[in-house]
Image (cartoon, rainbow, N blue to C red; front, side):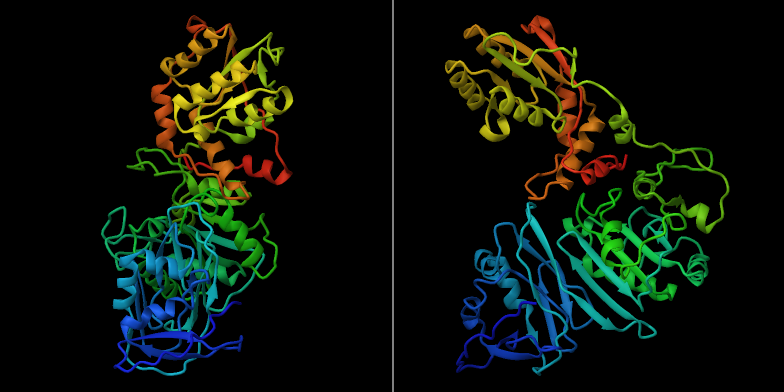
Length: 534
């Protein structure tokens, strides 16, 4: 565990206005803190001390004197979960404070010392910020006992995308009773889709606490998995949500673990990242019995019927259970003992069905690679359909040159680079989406000017499959360089798409099927999962 070293003494001749707290050197257990005070104008001298340290996790101290306000979150003694928004370009506290006038002002205004003592310090941890997203959320670690019956309440953060609550004395079990939160364990009192405040909640039905108590008596571990991306985007207050969850747990009166997905993909349902973390790190090393365990959620893909006025917003919960192979129930089935099975719809794209099909890469299967003489291959297809993978393969195996707008940024540079390659008598692949005739015409005219052959490679991929592929490649990207391509971009391609015709000047149009090559069995297992919730 890394700790700050105490700063050099600051000799202040005026009355201190603010206090900054640093742990003393070494790693005592528990460490001690000492208060060091100086005027606000001297604060910059402190910043030099932390210049080389990554932005820290802030932690609660068992004291009543600290009141810290950083951005969207507040740290109020032992009562709330702190939240700090860090700009993408800032990797240290010094960067954030000095590069952001607002950040510095928040710090100066936010520290209010009522009493200065040496106090017990639970956790302080430094982390290196590595994130492709514009904003990064940093949470304190909160460990205290202040439930109605003195229950242990421990919040902690896993990376930047997952927050975990251990409520009460954690019991590790092979049998797991897992639940969604909103719409399953609780609903709004107001009847609105989203709660108006942290107090706008009630149990799904009166029997929820009793039903959970009964399953816990059968040696099942009660666990909640919930998507809460609004915390990351700022549309939902982190402190308020945490207080709400704690209050719900206090009324249930059971040991509960809560896993909160803050971001996208890696921990967001229907992908099984939260479940994987729970199974590997949150259950005391005990393997889960998937035959007896189950998951309950309201996002079940149910359609509108005479007994359901409104269709489900997604099928994320049903797919979440399906992905890791445990039984699934809706809240009505589990809490209200509904016996009728409602009609539901799964996503139209089934990744397992696609992989189980045995198709050739090209249609026609005997498509010659390379063609006869100098040629230009114009790829046409959705983002994420496999264009770049095939382009790289052909470049390595057959010496094709590649022009790609993601790399070159403009179509003008793509055309210019294609011209350079053709002058060198090198075959060219235009690795862009090329959705419409206008975008293809630029390269068709260029090929004709060099007397080069011209073929279109049309990738056989639906919008739903492309969306799945885009999510998959972000999940398996170990370097975290891939950025998720959203539905808006995919819908834009679909709207713009004009099917290629031979009349445009192509000698042939080759259909390219998706035949992936996986680096390892784990990647294939991930691809077979449902990654899109509808």
